[in-house]
Image (cartoon, rainbow, N blue to C red; front, side, top):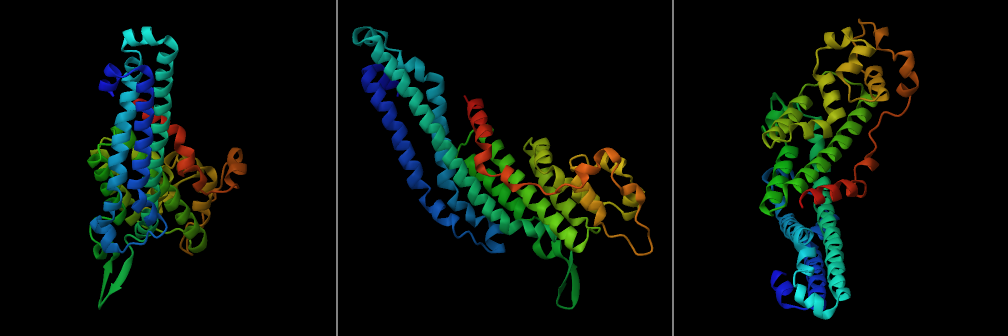
Length: 337
C-alpha cells in the first residue's frame, strides 16, 4: 500500500485499496467455510472437548481476524496520509481525485470492519455452541455418582479441569496464535463468558424452581478456577463482571445452611448484589430448608422491592448474542488504532 501510494496515481491508489479490501473479504469467507459448515453440527465428545481437538476449526478464522484487523488498523492510521502523500500528483491530477482516494480508504476501512465483525461472529458462534455441550458439567460438579462398587465425586471422574475451562483456554490460544489484537481478544472472552453466565444462570434458576436449591459447593469451585485463569491474564475483574449473577448463586449454594438462615433480605441483597430482587426472591423461595426448620420471615422482600421481586428472574439470552455486541466490538476495534 505504501508502494502504491508512492508510485500510483490517486485513481490507481483508489482502485488498489478497494481491491485489497474486497480480496480480504473473499478470503475470509472462503477460509471460514469449514467453520461455517461445522456450525450446524457441533457435536463433540467429552474427550474431544477436553483435548481441544475442536480448535483446528477456529485457526483459519482467528488468523484472518488478526490479518484483517492489522490491515484495517494500518488504513486508519496511515490511509489518509497515503492518499494525499504524493502532493505533486494530487496537484497535477486535481484535488478531486485526491479526495476520491481518501474516500476509497474510508470505504475500505468500513468494509474491513465488517469483515472483522463477521469473523468475530463466526468464532463466537462456534465456541458458544461448544459451551452449550460443556456447561452442564459445571452444574453437576461435586455431585456423587456411582462407579462400580464405589461412590466418587463427579469432579474426580471428569478430571481436575472442566471442559468449559479447556474451551476457554483453547479459544484464547487460537486468538493469540492468530495475532488478534488484545482488545478484540478481551471482547471475545467477555462475550463468551457473558453467554456462559446467561446459560448457567437460567439453568440454575430452572432447576432450582423445579427441584429446589440446595447446598452445592462444586459450582463455586469450578467458577473459581475460571476466575483464577482469567486473573492470570489480567482479566479477573472482567470475568467477575461477566459471570456476576451466576457467581452470586454459586456463592449462596456453597454457603453453610446456618449462614443463609441467619441472613435477612437486606443483608443478602448486599452480599449477593449482582442478583435482581426477583432472582434473589426465587432463590430464597425455593431454597431447601429442613422440615424441622421454619423458613425465616426475614427472607421476605422489603416493601420497597416487593414489586421488583415478583417480576421474572431470568437472565435474557437476547442480551448476549452477537447482534447486540456490535457497538462494543466497534469500540474495541477503534481502541486498536
